[in-house]
Length: 389
Image 1 (cartoon, rainbow, N blue to C red):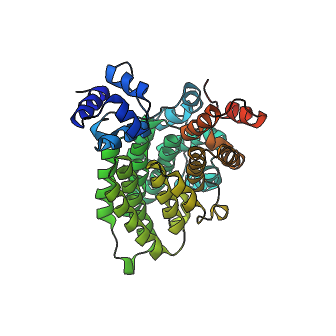
Image 2: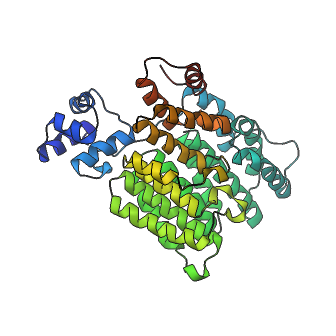
């Protein structure tokens, strides 16, 4: 199988471009392109690969086939060890057999932790909850529902903290327990997000398209649950397409998602499930995300003016991810003070979330690269997010 460097050099020659011309068109440094082609570098960030592929006028997947994304660091892996062990059935069980009602009550009580990105508390409470749920071996629908719900949340959390193999296990187990099409679609949507974070763009795109076709509702009769399931799968399809340099397909999918959002009328969380929150604001934020992927920071900043982020809860599932795009748009527009202020705002609202965001660290590095000296606040934030040296 050809390496990424071999694919780049072959495509560059077919386009009649020199290394310097490819660097100029893509915005990627000539030294990095040279290292890739020489084989001294074999890995690049997905965004870098997308820029090179766009300059060569091919899908991103034409130059990368085995991208797994940024994995969790050793400290994160150690911190979540008990959760992974419980997920594999190695957790400590209660002395008394748990009941479905008891587990459901405990899960409901834990929801503020999930919604508020309280990772430290979840790392403590989740292993026992998983171990207790693992004892529900029956096929009763209430048991399956509780298992599917907890495994979905666990898969989402492990994806958030970049523990991709464990996240996939949790989501696939949750999908096995889902006995409702819309519940299964919500889990598939999260799995598509996992695939996107791993750079498995084609797999994410095809999975989202298939399930979007399966759950597409008749708009005139659609419930919020129907619209959320369909809309999110369309958003995942659009996200995969735009990263794979398929702008027309990405726009078609997000236009359909907006149709679902308009029918929803406002952002809602069907079944009080924050992972399914969907509506016009969600679609607007994802449209801005697509614009950022396409390196259009001016458009992102204009679009952000019409998105009422102050009305949204500061959750990683919507507002914070959008604010990272806003911060990056400020950075790429050389508005470094504004970019840092957005990062500082996110830290204030969601400190445990921002630590796990490689995107936030990249933005911070970009700000620092343009400054001769750093303020005390900048040094403090760098230490807080564990920015490498």
